[in-house]
Length: 159
Image 1 (cartoon, rainbow, N blue to C red):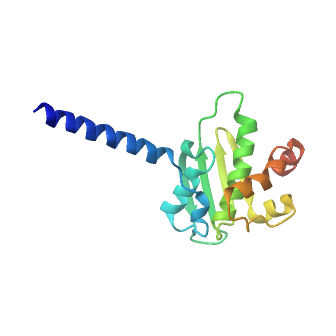
Image 2 (spheres, helix red, strand yellow; image 1 turned 60 degrees about the vertical axis):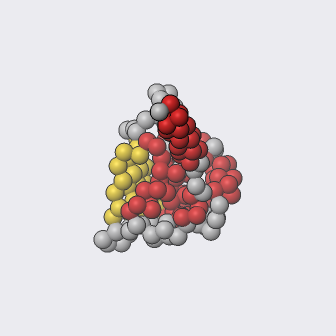
């Protein structure tokens, strides 16, 4: 009896530990590059892997008529961090979504009380080049970082 209880406890512990390791390992979001907006579960998976993805409250796909749109509603930054982090999150996530999902034309986001509306062409013009050819997250982050950290450029884009 004691051996059975011990074996069950050991097996349970191993399951818990292996589960934790799996949950902590996030897959490379760029493995899903080329996903189309109509694939709800893959799009949700992409969004949840991007910054602030754990705070996604609602996602809407508009694919009946062009332009195709993705609308996201987030919640949850601590007070005092909202505006700066929201701006960075919105711009980076929109850039990543346009890069990963080729048929999305508009990305709309609400983070806390701030609303953002981006088009693929608007971001191409802001960056001064086509960013959709990046094929890995590290390169895309390196490309976007100087733009997202420049408050004058961010204000120009958002106003």
